[in-house]
Length: 540
Ligand code: GLA
Image (cartoon, rainbow, N blue to C red; front, top):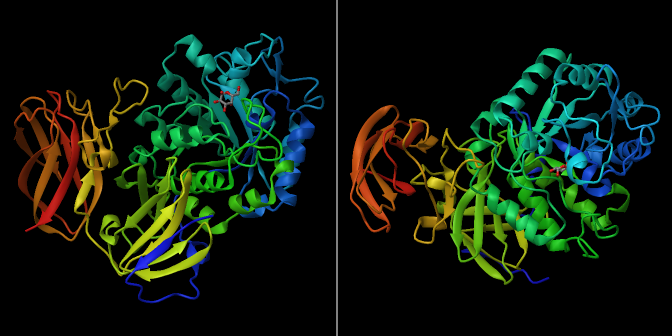
């Protein structure tokens, strides 16, 4: 395995470093869910034995100790509704009902999860040859199912799919909000909710669910990993406060027993692909739900998925999602704060989705740190030393997750549009997209289709500054003349932007920033904005 690591101007080589996992955990937000879910390995072929065996395996393999505590029964447990509409489990798959399965899971100190659909039918009923036509989705049975699933059977978690809802062409925000309200009213203990509708649903979702899928179903194939990462890398502003973008189940561990979805592939991902997949799910703070048959997880995969330093990055008390800090050629570098907001320690990922080797150079100021930087490879669990910058060559289809510690934290001098939060954003309805790859824009992306309503603006909600007077430069890509309202900590001013044939156009104004966190917004409630590329800040 060729991997070149060079720390330029090497100053000190650290023999021992505590690593992220060994650091004392502070109280933080609820971390992403970790566990196992039945669908990707078993589809409809589940049973009480499969589920209970997997609960046992979580304990005997050490996965529970590593943090994997949810055992989720996905689609396929449904039988029919009786004359009163009560859900009766599948009689051959769960001949003794469901409660004893949940009791078994709880008896092992694990939490139990279940599945439904916001509409009348589940995806299994719609697409996967489940022939019993009973409407087993939660629609129209919200109270009754909540009573049964949470109070009678005792589930702690529910995944709510959307094949049935989609078929009914219902208003999904209304449907899911109603389900959340009913669960809150009926359930006698807290229930965690995961929404599964295969695209970022909209900003309403963080008030309704703890996590939500942002993409279609994963398969153990690199193209799926790459596409899911590409979808999620501009959604960092929409995760936070204990609510997470769900990149779908982990597609690791299929090298001995292929996935039923494997579409003619004899094996799953390569070792480097598995390492990249897991590391990226960690740094993006996705829920970590294993999707394979745990009996067949190879030893080397087990090492990846139980790596405590990567898991600590996923379960970090700040609960943040990494965002793009460098995009050169086909490579990306992502970063997020860990342990302390705006501290001098950050988690960083070097990511090579391409087919060729890429040599990365990480300069400390790109991640708002003053050098020299002390670097630890969290995948290999090895210190790499201290230097003025880091150079590392990565194979195609790979990623490295690093812990980078600088001498001190620097104030932010650049805000990419892709890091911004749009209160009106929904991936489902955003025609032509909002976060769009754009070669002329810095880091290759810009935000489109803003303006026309107050909420259709772009906000950077915690801009870290030393405080004082600054030149703020807004870069847009205007085809025609435009007006943009720039608001800094509540003070608004209108910027006139002349047409530039869609090329980058810089507009500079003087602003005042507070010491600490600041809020910057660009928008126009009455008219469309040109694509927004970035904001830079220069201290006066
Ligand atoms: C959808 C979901 C999957 C799984 C199946 C079950 O496809 O995205 O994760 O729950 O439904 O039918």
